[in-house]
Amino acid sequence: MPVSTKIPDSHLDLFQKRAFAHLVTLMPDHSPQVTPVWVDFDGEHILINTARGRCKERNVQRDRRVALSILDPDNPYRYIEVRGRVIEITAEGADAHIDRMAQKYTGQKRFLWRSPGEVRVLLKIKPEKVIAH
Image (cartoon, rainbow, N blue to C red; front, side, top):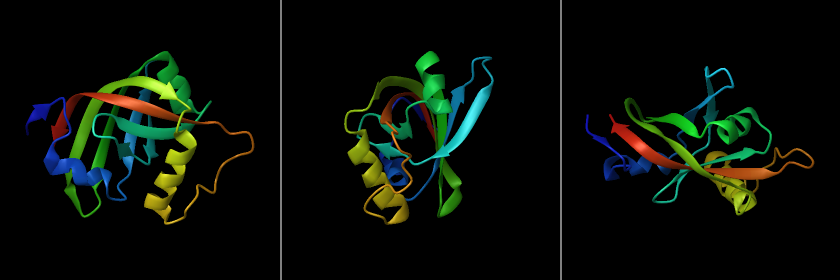
């Protein structure tokens, strides 16, 4: 299993499939917190879209270290593990991004579960250790 800082070409397809990532952030007491999330990749950063104030967003505001894994829905023995840091938390482009993710994961043109007053944010993760299985 090769270790790298880049997403290998052999596993880029996992970001195109309806594969969920399991994102690990760190709670204030340093215990892990894990959430299944929709995931995207811009060619350099892993992108996670969430709402401002959610647990994962609060956690990465305090501690930027994260880990995630993505299991191939067609072959559960094939997956990628990524450890890295959130290098940016931004609302810029997050609304359009969540609609693209809704299209990918649900087939709906828009994200339908937005709460009133909700502010969407993108977590941009820089991979620091990547293990592809």
